[in-house]
Length: 231
Ligand code: 6GU
Image 1 (cartoon, rainbow, N blue to C red):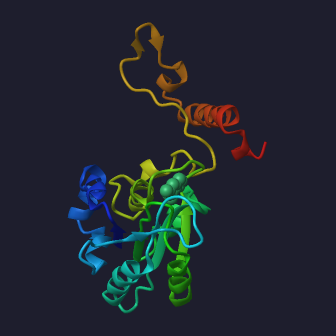
Image 2: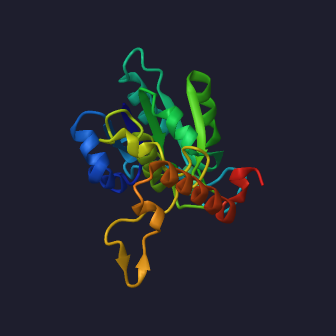
Image 3: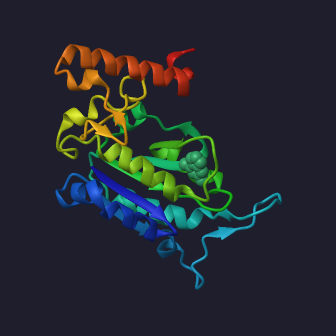
């Protein structure tokens, strides 16, 4: 998968050189290219923002640098790729595990990271008319910009690309894959500070272990996230 990111803070994305994502890039599963939006601003001060038309607090990102950056990426995309542009935004549709799974089969994603009070609306309008655009939020709270949200989405999507996670079985019983939260996990020793691992996990009875884990998942989901059960 090719992933382009447009941002005024490329340094945030150094985190994706670490751990599983770094390995996925080294092994060629993810071709991540990070672009500094200011390289697409052609005035002396490399300006990317201006005051909101109509008044109000804060600054809005100007359309021209965005069009230079996005046109450059789209012009350089594979002819058959049909890239999807994602603008992280607290005003977008909510990112979920099922969206991550859907996006993991895309061949080319472009993340446009806004800052300040957002990006001039005409950028969304223009690129929605020319191709596929989605505004996506990672939850009901406000971040300072799209960078941290993009990193979260890229990691959630990237680990679902076949081959990225070594043992695909470890993707099966995770939280949210079956609409439930994951059951609690234990390792050795069997007793630590007087706390014992539940006997069933030491029983060797795989049917009983599966049943116990399912019960734990349902109980935890009911307690912490009842809305996931439709309750
Ligand atoms: Cl995608 N962006 C910003 N700035 N804040 C957010 C968000 C995105 N998702 C939740 N909060």
